[in-house]
Length: 279
Figure 1 (cartoon, rainbow, N blue to C red):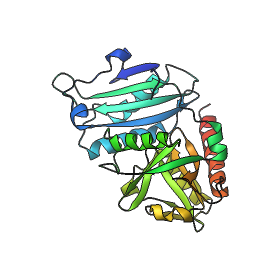
Figure 2: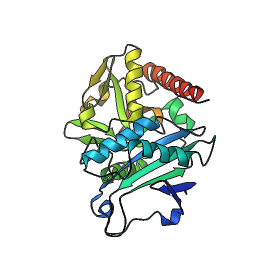
Figure 3: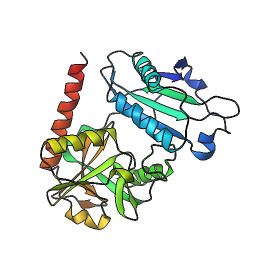
Figure 4: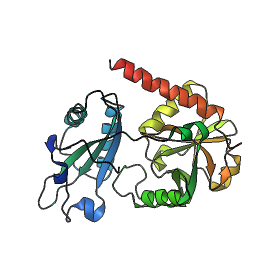
């Protein structure tokens, strides 16, 4: 995250951030056995918290990780830490790990400053690079994120915003995002069984269907890049961010397209409706 946390809890107890540590023998250190979620906090409200907690639970089940609390208790813990900074934007980071010889299974929650992205990336579009690699368990949001880290580093070296992971069947997702492309008038995104089904992605899919867009679920081979009319990535902090260049190749005419603009507006209206409902 890069920022010092405003608050940290372990299994619902507020702790000193310096005490949020793992022993070297913890399976999270030795085997990346752990799961995580990142939740956007808007005006003191955790956006789509229920969906994020359910995905945390699904990821934990996929790797046989025992969570030390019920769904209801996890929600309580999350709401409690968010309430420490009432009315403020922020980022809630949730990390669940197994026990080790010295500690019990733990769910750490960290309330951090909000993640902001430059406005010009939404207005003009961002660039991305492709990176050969895929996550070990595509549908689980685990701590095994080495390939994601390397893809992000490749993007930074190229002066770009995101790295797109390329498996044998094509581009599946971004290092920290889901990918959509407009091809032949249809909205193409890799299927659920090949990616982490992002909470933001799920909302975008619903909004696209409501507006009559044709959804196509398949990987995106790099060879198809010249045929992409538009592209965008989705994530918790980004919402919908246009991608106008990949590996130096302009997407469409190199400008943010109408499908992307329509869905951006629809998503921000959805966020505004959420905030209104919380008042």
